[in-house]
Amino acid sequence: MDREDTRLLAACPLFDGLEPAVVKEMLVCLEPRINKYKKSDTIAFAGEAFDSIGILLKGEAQVIKETAAGHRSMMAVICPGGLFGEIVVFSGNAAWPATVIAQEESQVLFIPRRKLVGQCERSCAWHRAIIQNMLRIISEKAMMLNKKVEYLSIKSMRGKLSTFFLEQHKKSGAATFRLPMKRNELADFLNVSRPSMSREMARMREEGLIDFHLETVRIIDVERLRETAE
Image 1 (cartoon, one colour):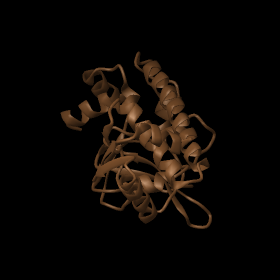
Image 2: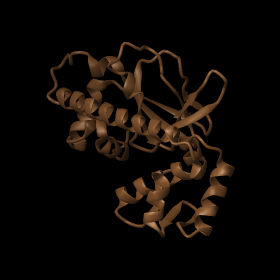
Image 3: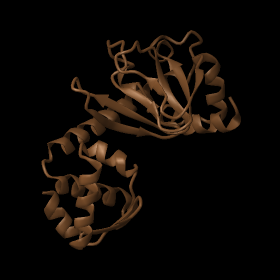
């Protein structure tokens, strides 16, 4: 693993509060493996045996949930430094809960589950810090999934979009912001069709609520957007 990968891992939420030099030392104990994937390769299949959590080192990936009828819903987009599989670590479930697919050429570091939940053989001082970070990550992920359910409960397309744009407005603190995901990924996240979402966004622009170009959105009338979201 090169220095750039070590710096990336140090910025990962799992290693929050630990210096790159400490992270490099930790890797000896954690015994990770690194796998490479081409675009569209499946990194993990839902239902397959789970034995490691993944950290994306390079590329981009999506977490996909598929229903029995074959309908796919995009749950999350993973960027370099992002984790996946962390929800299962402390549970009795021994299977991947969702499918993870590489959206471009990617590289993933896998840390064995036993190294995170078991007693550290070397009694490393950082092991407690990793467990605390993991519990915080799981808590935040649970909140994100709760937000996903909230979007699914909103019936109208405009209501979903308005709520999403207002949340991004609040996070950025500005009227103009970049979407945290691509348009097709946003449509999957909101559980709507991409063409219908694009048409609704165009109508919202014509009515003077928003303006947009590519992945950048500008809120023009925040009060009307709030009324639509309610």
